[in-house]
Image 1 (cartoon, rainbow, N blue to C red):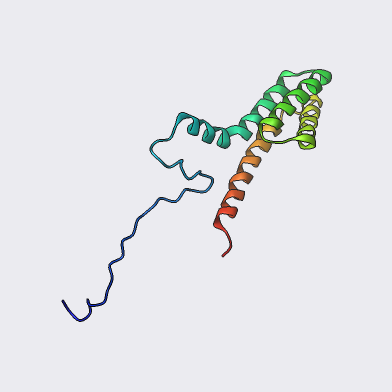
Image 2 (cartoon, one colour):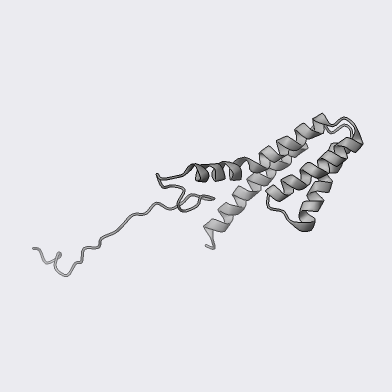
Length: 134
């Protein structure tokens, strides 16, 4: 053995895959269950699908009173599904109810656009929070 090799230690290293941004630590495992897959799909598409539902409801309701009542009902349900509680859920329901009641909103799919914006904001927020300081 040469003089350089004396006194050196051999380090053993284990490599572990780090989860991606917004991914749970067990999601990369090969033993992913259908429930895990459903949760990932819901997290990824939930806000966008909610927006699409609001736009379809807006197109289906041609009279303001019907739009208001259905919009309030569906809006509150969607707010609860997206995790809002109390006054936050009520405010979202009111906004959706008014959106479905106001004539002329059919041309612009605001529900879908807002849903997509919410999802992008969630992803960016998760990226910022996971990168940490420095």
